Figure (cartoon, rainbow, N blue to C red):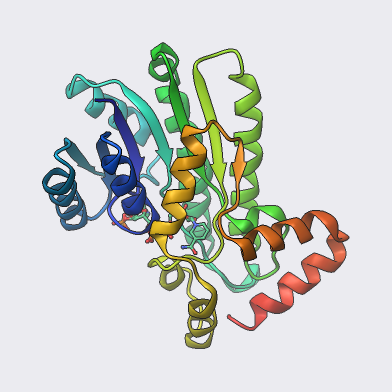
Length: 260
Ligand SMILES: NC(=O)c1ccc[n+]([C@@H]2O[C@H](COP(=O)([O-])OP(=O)(O)OC[C@H]3O[C@@H](n4cnc5c(N)ncnc54)[C@H](OP(=O)(O)O)[C@@H]3O)[C@@H](O)[C@H]2O)c1
């Protein structure tokens, strides 16, 4: 059966995507920084679904890491049919109060690594009869968000890049899908430095990572270009498109101020 490479497959949405794909019979290649998570997920996948699961421990925010990932996959004698660019994180706060090195690290992981891994694996994806790329953006991609300015911009990059790539690859065997989740029940929010109050508010509206993964894989295999999971998230993305930007971005800024 075919292999799917999932960045950030050790927990959260990436892990849920690994479960969803394994349930469909796909073998998986998982990458993250925490070996215990990866061992745990690989064992679960192999035992539950009788598929193969391999892992690679790497910090994907390191410059040139795509070469190491490609070498690892080649050393396994595997060619992937599905690439899931999921690893990413957010940092909240006003620009002047943030740590520049941390912002650069987030920008590198969310944008540079996503692009570089796609670039590195495109030749082998194009050789397959049918292959798929899934990029994880966010509802933050649909408008600027004061208080999440850099993170939101990285996710606008992911969405825009995905849309263009889909058209660039229109006459190839590779399909590109971008999913833009809203708040989801993962460790994302803790890493984003939200306040206790913010975490409580987000907990009231979040989706489960399994729900997001189900929508993502359905859209991926159906060859959809863009998908926003959940009715509330669909409605807010639609409003962002419909309403004047100055209005929607001021509202977004006020909402985020409440969770900082
Ligand atoms: N949760 C949300 O509310 C939400 C909403 C919209 C979009 N998203 C997007 O969904 C994607 C997945 O996030 P999540 O919510 O599932 O968060 P998560 O639970 O924190 O999972 C992130 C995964 O990426 C890995 N990762 C993070 N930094 C890494 C690095 N430098 N190198 C290698 N692996 C790294 C993590 O493992 P290690 O920490 O062990 O490395 C983990 O496996 C992200 O792109 C995020 O922006 C999340």
